[in-house]
Image (tube, rainbow, N blue to C red; front, side):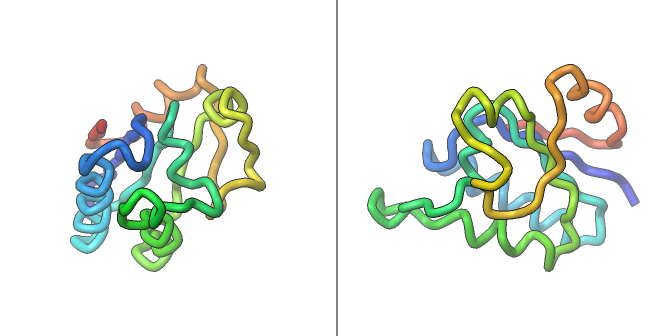
Length: 118
């Protein structure tokens, strides 16, 4: 079994790319791969509570994030500095995450067999 890390940096509702990556995450997990995610920069907004996606006529990705545990995707890494810069805290997030510091990103990435970035 290979370990996959999906690294996301783009805002949640900036186009179809985010939905495509989330679909890939679920597909990889469905094939019994070890899947983790890392959210950096504006991607931390994916996990913000009380998203109002219906107001911009977009599919609510919060439901997908809340279902990750069902797919045995338990390692969600979020860069602490990205949260802080955007005025968010861990309490403002939909699901439990592992906070990492910017200086630890490269070491975390290097632990995975396959890294996909979006």
